[in-house]
Amino acid sequence: MNIGIQALGSLRVVDPARKPEETEKQLRADYTAIKEAGFDAIDFGLECFLDSRSLSDRSVPCFFDRPMEELEEYFLPYRELCAESGLEISQTHAPFEKCVEEGERREHYFGVIEKAIRLTGFLKVPYCVVHPIIMRRLYGPEKEWKDNTAMFKRLVPVAKESGVMICLENMFDRNPRDVDETVCSGADEAVRYLDELNDFAGEERFGFCFDLGHAALMRRSPRDYIKALGGRLKILHLHDNDGTHDFHALPFTFVAAWGGPYVINWDGLIEGLSSVGYDGTLSFEAGPGILALPEPLKQAGRVFTAECGKYIIKQLREV
Image 1 (tube, one colour):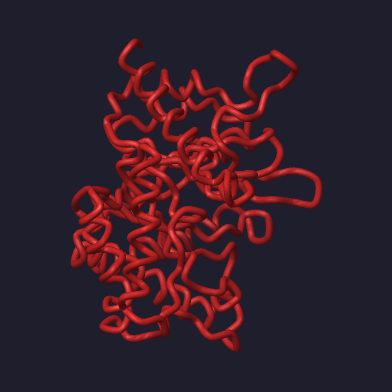
Image 2 (image 1 turned 60 degrees about the horizontal axis):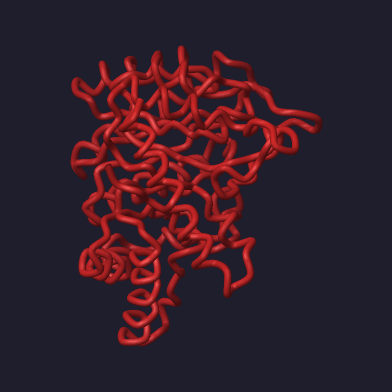
């Protein structure tokens, strides 16, 4: 079982105008730091390479509007130097926007996601997380289901061509006071999506990325959710929060009271993973937690996170 870290906060976005030797020096230093911290893998967030406004505002230049040949040339050093460093990219994350309005903007959004899946294949990565369109609070569950199943079914040909499995994720929606249910907030809906989409694809082309922090926000038991997914679970987003805000904090850093239990049920996570025989990457999506640290402490934060991964692996072996 591998331990992974989110690229955000640990792997820099290189300026395309930089000389190749400068790019190589920067990336080699980042990969070395990640490897020396104790990680085996990277969750490569493609959303980090664009201004998120470009997905909903066409007046903002979008990084992924470049031709595929140019994008592949840009990402080639990331792929080659990662392999050279002894790391692997275990999963990617497609760019995302909460709810892109129908019409030209949504068509552009779908095009960006398709390029993200193609780049996942180019990077030789098996899984790409694709966020659903979050729209239940605005338009209701029926339209949300209809629009999302249509989007994911549209992505089947490019996923097959690229040799990539698309992973859905348990989501939440923020309202002014609290959080609302939305796509895959519950395990039953996640199973329904996956089985419908895989039946359409005629093969297992869709899997699931269980986000521990999101489950906590929606008061879902990680043990029960993971058990319901069974073998549909392919990858993870592990991070901590206070049960109210999506902090993406370092693991094991929030407690309900002084000396009390953790807010997030990490033991339930371990029990769930054990019950389904999960042997994939323990990927920590705690980039904001790393970014919050002063520069001299960032590597210590990475080391701590990797040690948490080792602790979880040890607990899984003892369950």
